[in-house]
Length: 203
Image 1 (cartoon, rainbow, N blue to C red):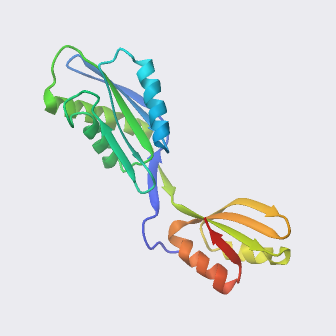
Image 2: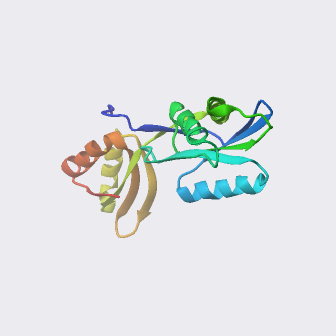
Image 3: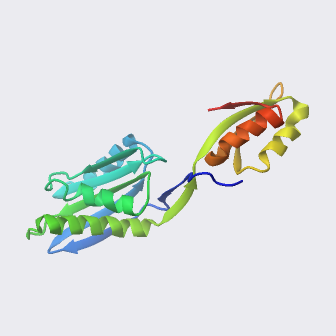
């Protein structure tokens, strides 16, 4: 099936950590796969608890297949000198559902705002490089109900589409819960109802 629009997004393949030194200051960077702001808070709390004596715990995150939620936090550093460079590194890597926290231990030498921007940005880029990247496909969920004798029609309908069978039940008929690639969803729905005359509901 041909693609009408981009329905892919990228997540980190694995969580990672890295370290960077700049004029005596130590920058510890951590990446986390996150799907909610609650998970962001949990990871932030854990990192702050692990490094309670650090000078700053700066971070940025993007959440959502369409990059719906974005936030950057300087945690006391000069405005836009820490969180924003971290966020830019995430955007540059074309990632979502990721949180990057950079912990700084001040080394006694002032870096200046350009130096801070460089250091926080480099720390974020470094940890994201180690995290690697994996492409994901956006999907829509559908429920298909049919009589037992029509199960073969469901198989025929699904065959030409990129799909996953999430659940299958046999109670007073056949029930399938399927995930279909988003840019094929409208065509899938049309074929289900008009060609195969199947009862389909979207979630």
